[in-house]
Each structure stands twice: as structure tokens, then as C-alpha cells.
Image 1 (cartoon, one colour):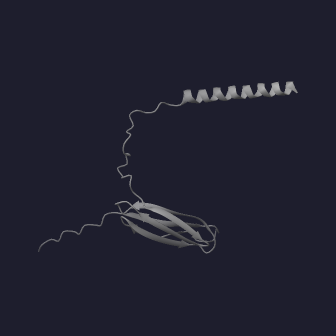
Image 2 (tube, helix red, strand yellow):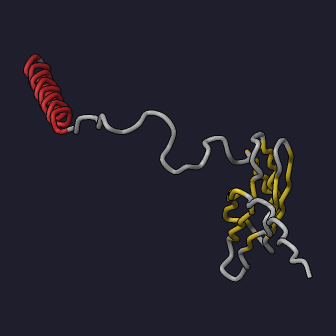
Image 3 (cartoon, one colour):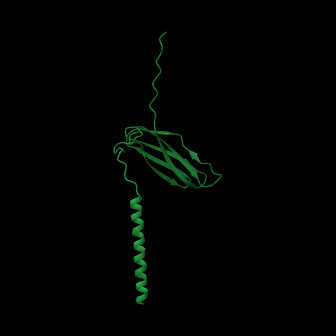
Length: 136
């Protein structure tokens, strides 16, 4: 009985030792953090505060997305529905603009079961300016 305990203790010691060596090798192999990266805003030029928060509800074969935009920029949302059956047509909704502090609702459906549904966001373009009228 003591031999089994000593054997298990030796096995456990070797396992801990090998784990420690592997962790030490990973720590040494990890690259140092880059110091030239800015710690402020992202480089994309897009503001961080964008995008309506959406809640998607699936009831049988119908999907509804309820969205609220707490930000000052208009968000253009679209609902995408992927159906479970191969013969059932997947659908994408028409874009809906959700203005600042506004709510929007988008619906979609399948004939049978819904496999997945998601909402995509896009900044709404500013309204086009009217062209200048040339005098006669």
C-alpha cells in the first residue's frame, strides 16, 4: 500500500514539475508588449459610441428585433434570418434608421423553424444636400 502511495506521489511530482516547465517556457516565449501603440482612441476614425442595442426574440417561425439607440448618431439596422430547412428561404430585412434616443423594431420569419437571427449595424449617411440652383 505504501508503494502505491509513493508511486502516486512521484507521478504527481513529475506532473507538477513538467507543468511548471511548460508554463515557464510559455512566459519566456511571450512577446513583450508594444510600447508604440496608442492607448487612447481606435485608429479607425469611427466614434466608439455607436450602435443601437438590440434584443432579438424568436417565437416559433417569427423573429422580432427590438432596438434602442442611446447614442447621438443614427444607426441603420437590418435583421438577418437564417432558416433551419434547406428549402426555406433565408431573409434580410430592409434597412431601418434608428435615430438618437429612439427605438426601432424589425421583423422577419421563416416558413418553419428559425436556425439563427442577427442584427447588423451601419452608420446612416447624412441627408444629401440639395444641389445649388443655377440662375437663368
